[in-house]
Image (tube, rainbow, N blue to C red; front, side, top):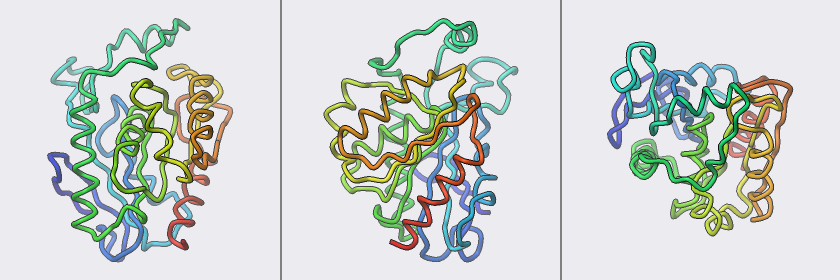
Length: 241
């Protein structure tokens, strides 16, 4: 693996001919969720049934939660701040509709990830049509927000255990994903991000013409083997496309 900084974000590169992002294979960019350490998703590249030529980039979110919220969050990162009370409410079954909210910090996170996609494309010689973007939870929300605004169509999107924000901004942009393969997964008993909201997002994407491969599972806010199978299938399609 190789570590570097691009577009102001610390990134781990893995896979490829040299296991450091070398070669000319497809690129998969995966963004971790709120509160996770920056390298939370790095082990995934070893768990997928894909050829070694596929390259991976794992960016670390810019916000240090320990500095913002205290030592209890040591090692945790975030793309934008979320009020911890929202998590406590969710655990108690109290739902708050945030689908039309535009989180403070989303624009800055979007700018950083968009810049990273561009710089990785230049550095690694990875065009958009050979790049898969995605993530888990907050990282998936950000990935979708960025994909909707990129000038070139991506090879695919991966939306693991995600939800809806900025709906009024997203809705007119959904048609830009027409025909784009999207793996969207969600646990039926997710205590943090409601399953029915994920279903609504799925239906909105399909209604706009996106090729959504829906993976639901019996579980909570997590990544299962069936989710990895879906991601592996998508990456292999890009490789052979």
